[in-house]
Length: 224
Image (cartoon, rainbow, N blue to C red; front, side, top):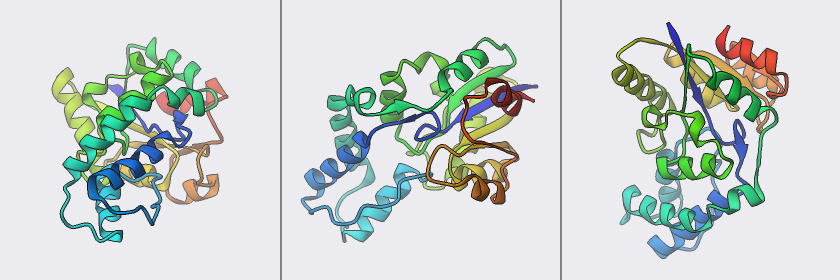
């Protein structure tokens, strides 16, 4: 059975340098006419979940997530070059992606809280688009609950390839780990974000790596 490796983006693959967060704030103010007051915790959450929370925190009742996302995506498209200018790839990522890309027993895709267009802009900024079958990914517009993104991704992959997969989720937050476990997926965590390794271990991650610079250890975790 082949492995379906589902990559989180932010602080797992790359750091976006705050570009998306700035676009989010700008889009919110433009679409709602309400001044930005409360910055939520973005890590590990879906954009749909964050959107509902931001609207509630600011008392917005007359705007839909779809309307907001349309403007947000448009703004990101104008500043997409800034991801590479202000952000960076996380350590070891490119080598791991290239190694897995050469393996016929692995399909790589994205499971991310980002909306699809922003996810695509982020990975494209670092020349990573060809590493993933983005068509079968799980995205922040699929559902508010991250575990559902993992399930949708697996369903899409199995429908497209007409075969079952062993799912593997790799991310940097407790939400990534719990989403994996809820879908009987292998949970690989990297301590490259704000969540300490001990907390990722306590959440139930099968393997916790400090980062992906040890290619042999990373490949063993993702495929072993």
